[in-house]
Amino acid sequence: MGKTISEKIITSRLGKEVIAGDIVIVPVDLCMVQDGTGPLAIKQLRKLIRNEASSESDREVNYKIFAPEKTFIFLDHAAPSPRKELSNVHRELRDFARQTKANLSEIGEGISHQRLVESFVNPGDIIIGADSHTCTSGALAAFATGMGSTDVAVVMATGKTWLKVPQTLLINVEGAFPKGVYAKDLILYIIGMLGADGANYRALEFAGHTVENMSVSGRLTLCNMAVEAGAKVGLVGSDGLTRAYLKEMGRENRYREIKADKDAKYERIFEIDASKLEPVIACPETPDNVKPISQVKKQNINIDQVFIGTCTNGRIEDLRIVAEILEGRKCATGTRLVVAPASRQVYLQALREGIFEILVEAGATILNPGCGPCVGIQGGILADNEKCLSTGNRNFKGRMGNPNSEIYLSSPATAAWTAIKGKISNPREII
Amino acid sequence: MILKGKVHKFGDNISTDLIAPGRFFHLRNNLPELAKHTLEDADPEFVEKVRRGDFIVAGKNFGMGSSREHAPTIIKLCGVGAILAKSFARIFFRNAINVGMPVLECETEKIAQGDELEIDLIKGTIRNRKKKLELRFHPLPQVMLNILRDGGLVEHIRKHGGFQL
Image 1 (cartoon, rainbow over the protein chains, first blue to last red):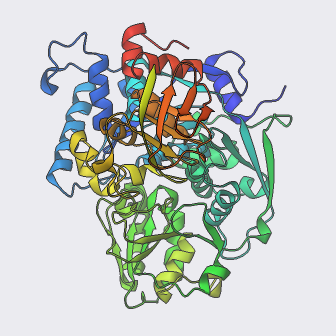
Image 2: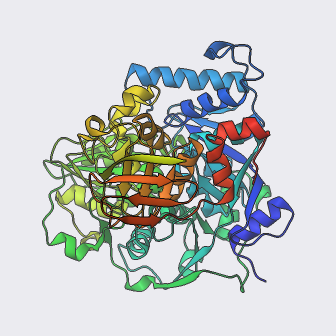
Image 3: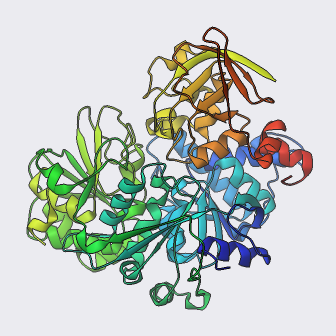
């Protein structure tokens, strides 16, 4: 019987046949924590190895981890640290990485998910991260899923985790995007269609000609937001574009073709005609509250802050679109534009291409690579009653640090044009 | 094992941002302090009102969003005996079991704010004596039941030296 991408990857890593519904213990190729989830993972690891340690005090524990070269610590959420409590967290994580020889990604290197796909993830890998957007790496045909700190602590200690092989929903997309419509609009549309729990426990597989012709950057945006419909993983089969991306990142030799079989068994198949889509907005307070921009625009929603960045839309391809729209224009009076590139690599490329000059002249504030204001810690926390349009993935109440503010989500093009107009606007007016 | 307590009712889609808001990110290494803000953005008085053994009862997709395990951990620190919801978001559900917080999937429409419930974790029943209501909850998969019985994932691994599926 044919297999889905999830079934193929897990079968291959286990060396025995599995099908959706099986509960299995799998070897993990890469595990990660970040500065929000790392300290709790270390605390749990300390309990796990207590038998061997002479004392429970932090300094004297001799941490042993299963595979330091497969373990990653990212300082990206509160980077650089805005307050002393978080500085101490960063120091604890640096000390842990030094002692265990785990990989440390310092402040300024960028968001974990972007760093992983740039430098470490390969098709067919099983990846467990203490961050819900770990599913981003599925765009390279890796089985990548978010768990909590304790699960990752156990992976650190044993190199393994348990999981249920998920059922799969196939999202088959055909047709070309109309002008002004991007991967972000597609995934928001899909989340609106499925609902915030519509793919709970399932894998989302994205396929069809639209996805086959989509850049890896766009595929990353799709897989990144799979969790916003509750999915365990978001997956795109690997192909020539995946190979070209790995080549660009210096590891073409790690390419493997992983595709679903033609006769794979799906729980449900959804057909989407991309040519019928228009730009969309996810309105407060859930990412599935998705409305076409033509409808939202009528409400004349003034925007106090536009935020462009995050693991969803902080890549060079996103910034290029933004620069095209902002070139020779100024942000509207009363609308702040904050931009955070997803990684140092993106930052450097944007510098080389002159993108930041265009953005800064338009009035943008450029932040260091990292999660920025998306997680409500720093870099643009909203005032009471303010409204923000973000290219991020979540618009929950309080997400950006203030429960008395509102967050709308869109593509980078919609965000850039909105920064110019000062209210939620349709990028088709200029594209 | 019988749990008894009072109900604190919430709606659908309670995110982990509502349970453990990002603006208290700096308190994540100080769980007792973070626990003082549990569910603050969904019900500012929750922490004052909740008593040891009480239940959180919610609609669908409880715990959606961020993987922060601090969310079920601080709910547990508040003394909550169990969380009942129509459905749970995947990562929250797994985290709750891992930290030894009982999470029960059941129909919650007929349960109201302030109701007093008796829950039998072994039999899988939820009773409201006053309203003469008896509900059943979906049993946990065996692997999760094993982890919960051992008191959480760390204890489970320490006891068995690995996963017992």
